[in-house]
Amino acid sequence: MTKQELVTLAMEAMDHAYVPYSGYRVGAALLTRDGRVYQGCNIENASYTPTVCAERSAFFKAIYDGVRDFAEIAVVGGKDGVITGFFPPCGVCRQVMREFCEDDFLIHMGGADGEIKTVTLSELLPYSFSAKEHMQQDT
Image 1 (cartoon, rainbow, N blue to C red):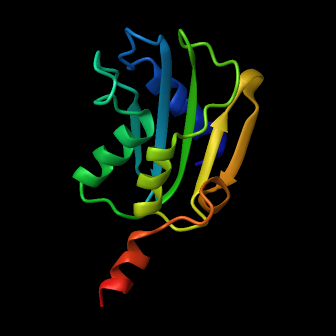
Image 2 (tube, helix red, strand yellow; image 1 turned 30 degrees about the vertical axis):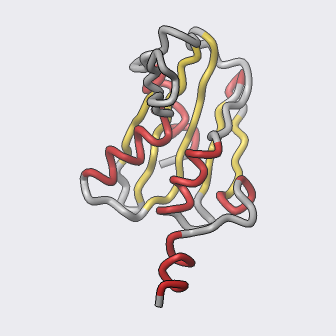
């Protein structure tokens, strides 16, 4: 699957967002190493803390299905569903990615006019703490 196809699926996922408070629709499309795609959207809540980002929504769907091997994710977003710039994953989403992904995991951010910016997880979250490191410390 190309990164453009993955971004297109993320754009499709934006339509499912529940955003009555901010109006910012975010969609994600997570590609597993075996070729499956899990889409996610952001879901807001009046008390804000229980809000779930699109990236975590996609990851949690895949994890529920028993998937633990991920290749890349595309993320797009914008006010009222209009993409005007890049929507990088928040800190919490970055840490969830780090829990399940290696340093070379790709994050594609779709921007205005079809532009795509791609970074690795290690570029997006340097000096991170992974599950693998935590498990090594426990032994």
